[in-house]
Length: 304
Image (cartoon, rainbow, N blue to C red; front, side, top):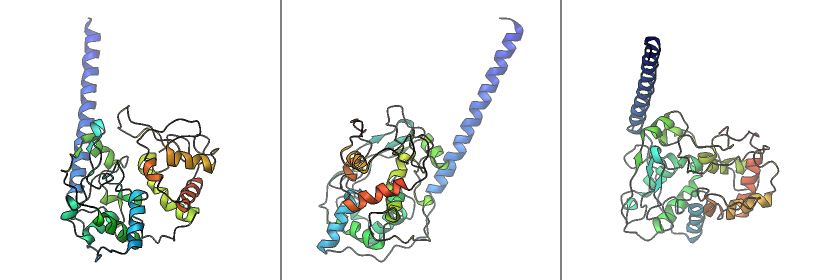
């Protein structure tokens, strides 16, 4: 190897090493910022809310807990509320929703603290919850929050230990870049409650329901690979009325995919798509979600 080539290789190696050091340093700074944010104690009062036993309220709570705020879905806290499936997302981390019945965390939370968790993403200790998709349903009116709390309180106690939660370095960086919500409470406006219209089969109500889709399909709902996710993870589709999305879909095709996981081409969606929960939406909610998606700006696939 001649001297010039050797010098070039040494210089290239030094540059590569410097680049790696810079990237590593950036990641460390972002991770520390993430941890500092997770240590923040929020000054959000616990609402004066107490569970109800009215059958109509419990029925409403059951519907919401199975659909719009799917805490008893298999991929969330499980059908019995005793804990969900283990979700291993490689370098992003490992997550498992805890036992929320009276046999688990439900025993240590008051009704008001549970309501604050649902509305604000704030745990009993005043700090942010991790990974829970509170932003999907934090808009629920107080009457619906009461219904969910009341229904969860009615679940029989389950004796099952909570699973592991591990937040990887990559997840911390993606959170700070607003590419993956892990630190939930910092994303919620705790001083403003947005007025929600009564359920109706139109885009006015649908604009709230489409938030159920943004966690996977992105803020613009146009899908594409989830940043940092392992190659084995499904790629969310484009839900906007774009040529690469739902532009040519009919409402009937949309409902079929929503409730059975079967697309218009006959392809089965990945189980990551929570169609089990969406199958519990009623006709008003399905129409509202459809109209809400039709009203978003058409966006090419991948521009999450």
